[in-house]
Amino acid sequence: MTGLPRPGAARSRVISPDLVVEAEALRTGARRVAGMDEVGRGALAGPVCVGLVVVDVATGPAPAGVADSKLLTPGARTALLPALGTWGVARAVGHASADEVDRCGIVGALRLAGWRALDAVSEHAPVDVVILDGSHDWLSRAPLDDLLDDVERPSRTAPVVRTLVKADQHCASVAAASVLAKCERDALMVELAAAHPAYGWASNKGYGSAEHVAALLALGPSPLHRRSWRLPGTDGDER
Image (tube, rainbow, N blue to C red; front, side):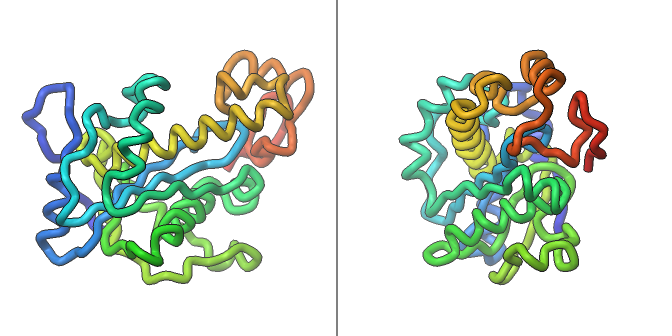
């Protein structure tokens, strides 16, 4: 793992993500660089999802409006999907289920989802460097070997992982990955809400809203809840 200094320290508070960090990695020998970001880490129900967007030296600037998904409205995120579907070399979203969160812990589940995204692009766009949002390398350092005998292990050569705090605000590939992951997970939670309408997932996307908590207290957890967590009305242990 290699930490990166925060770029653009003198910029204004409103930051337009660019490819400066990605270009530096490409100049120093990488053929393909991927931005990676996760969504759903703090949810009480549903999967954790990891977005991945791969760029190379031929990749142009990100589509106008790309930004950290948390800074965009749902409508703005959805409007970006057609342009993001053709930007860069490849893109994918990996998922790890609530059951896998329970079995592996949240860090193990993040790693599973991240490697599933990498595997999805490995045939035609193997990645040399991953820029990971945050300061913790959960992609390559999670202790899965003893935990996941019955779950697939990463079979590809591990890319170099470079962490960067607020990479989703500075790196266009990471911002794009965050938008793709957020849109895909939100759509999935809306779909799952049809079978479990009492929990309000169509609006809260599995996070701990008042409606969601009230339903948990009244009904208990569904099969799609992270039962190892300290859910309201249960005595589970959160990982």
